[in-house]
Each structure stands twice: as structure tokens, then as C-alpha cells.
Image 1 (cartoon, rainbow, N blue to C red):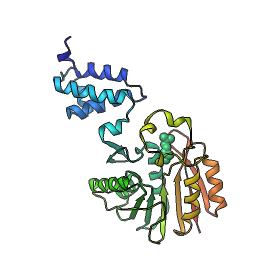
Image 2: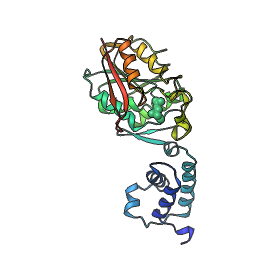
Image 3: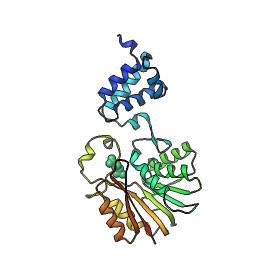
Image 4: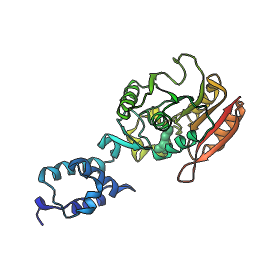
Length: 279
Ligand code: GLN
């Protein structure tokens, strides 16, 4: 068969064997959807559809980027999170399914009707926007230290049509003093020099969103210590962390005086977040 008459199925098979990822077939389909403007279900319904030569050329360029290791979300420029489609750039962490557990856990808390909530180090705005999409009556704020992240989270709020206030601050520093019913964060929590940082998507994500000191807990320690001054009595602090950090994070919460401290698991069955209540 000549180059000019390759079918969708043929190019998808070729691309998915070349892409070295657990989700290689999905990645191949998402890239083809981007190039053709078709939905992924259409490739299943019409596997014999022939691609135009220009489509094939553009597709191969995107596939090469993915084969070289660039995250699928950076190539597409967007990522699904919760029920939202968020713009993604290399300025922030790419929202991950694990972080949806934080959203689920936050929604399950006994919070006031018009809860005041803040997402610190919001990046794309993912957590705060997912919460607002479920609880439009909440008063939600988000902060980030990186100006590009602040701009990105604002664009995502607009894209989702959600009233999120995003400001620049380094955790609480620079924020006007107020009290929250819920403080939530997916801070950096990887140990400096962790071997995990040399493969996969993290190579393309900023260190400031990933790495936090020798044991990975610098940001978490800071947030646990500082949040007590910003929580309303009975307010909750909820932090994402690594699968092996549950016990250390629970100890930090308890040592700082939080009660009802509890670690919850992600969809893979690993410890992923810890929460506690301030009295
Ligand atoms: N969960 C991410 C990873 O392991 C890290 C996210 C973070 O540091 N906040 O790739």
C-alpha cells in the first residue's frame, strides 16, 4: 500500500508501537483526533478511513514529539481533569488523575454551605476549579508563586466559566489575612535527586512544582505549620503527598495540633492525601 493511502487504523497501530508509554494507543488516538478534528470513537467506527497527505504529515510530527518523550498534555495543550478540560503549559504541573482524589475527599467534608476555600500552589487551577464546578456557591480562591501559573489558572477559570479569584503569593506570604473553612494543596513533595525525576512527564514539568527539599517534605511542613493561622475553628487542611509519605505527614499534622488526622488512598490503592482539622 502506498504512503498516500494509509488508513486510520494503520497509522494508529504504527504510532502506538513507537510510543513508549503505558497509554500508547490512547496517546496515538488523542494525537490523531487533534490533527483530524474527529472523535476517537470515529476511528473505531471507520478504521479504514484514509488520511489526507497533509493530515498524515502533521500527525507524524506530533507522534515524533511524543516518541521523544514530550507529555501528551503539552503536545495537545490541554488535559482532562475531573469533568473539566484545562489548558496546560510547561509552566505548571500537568493535572493528574490521582489529584482527583483530593477533590473527592474535599467534597465529602462537612463544610458550610458557602465554604471559604483556598487552593495553594494551584498551577492550572485544577483543584479549585473542580471544587467550584461541583459547589458553585463556595467562595474559592487560588494562589501560585509563578506569574505564568497565575495567568494560566485565570484563563482556565474563564474557559470553565467559574468565578475563581487567582492571586500571586508564596503560599500564604503576600495574602491579605483571612480565614478559610478548607485549605487544600498539591504542593511539590518529591525528594531532591529522586530517580523518579529522570523519566516520564516530570522531565518536562517545573522543579518548583515537584521537588521540595531533601525528604520532599519542606513545603508540606510549611503548610501544616502556617495553615493554623488561616483556618477557621473546625476548618480543614488537606494535602496531597507521595505514596510513601503518609505516616510522616500524619505525624506532622498531629505534632502541630490538628485533630481527626487521616490519610486516604488514590485510585491505585496508594496513600495520596492527608487531612486534619484545626480547633
Ligand atoms: N504526583 C506527581 C508525580 O509523582 C508529583 C506531584 C507533586 O510533586 N505535587 O509525578
